[in-house]
Length: 249
Length: 150
Figure (cartoon, each protein chain N blue to C red):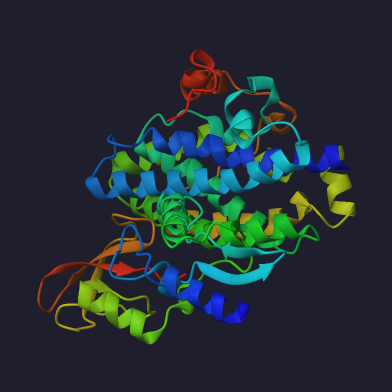
């Protein structure tokens, strides 16, 4: 059981860390000063959330520190969903990805806060407070860009088409998910789908965007299968600890 | 005797300022959740404000050095996550301190700290620190920060 709980906790931590790292790439490159600050703030929240889950994972593991878990695992040992590791490309693309993921993340923590596991429940309640305004941020921007100029509309519509294939894995259930759900520790991802559809459809309608058709489903992030983008992200994020093991600030 | 000593520690911690908003103390901010005494050790429970707030590590270090300066060495600081920190824990007095300092205090109704008008507009939900949003007063036209309500 402990191994599965560790794996389940790492999935949550990895999602936060990798998306946090992606958001940190916006620091000093935001389209406006306010947005630069907003995306950096979101990054900071996600790093903080990741730290909470890694601390718990570290306790469950018994050997590795939270930093070891973040900086000394290889690509195939990361269990985040592929959607969070995708490159930023442009501001509109980041907003689309974040909106699709934030909508899920909001529902995920809303459900995980009822976990029978006290630590997961506490961390979920805490994270939920922050994810609520992350969602508000990406949703408001998506409406503005979708219902903006012809150019902004066309760009975010294209990003929706490109990213859509990565949304399906949010709702998949594998052996570990099923076991955690049966023990009332984890949640049933597939139960989040209806609510997610509702948030997406209502927002796309307001943004005057079209919901993409389901096609190819990219899967496997939670089992260590990743896109080509994760390796580059890790190379940058882990460089210091790899080049100078145990370096301290 | 112990309860007297615990009160003394509460008072000491009330002298430790928040690193980013030094007008209020870590006790007023509501991050010190409990102080107890077991097995000759003071157990201090701390909860973070925002998950990633960089001030958390700083105020924990500040708390440690404050206690050590006052010759208290038998303490242990533990971070807890539940119940999650909320601005509801701030007293009316603390909120008034924030307002006088120029920060609009946490409230569902955002009020300009300069002219007290509630005719304000949100510029960005994200400000200079994780806990603040950025606004502008439509009456006196001054920009100001609001301590977010969470």
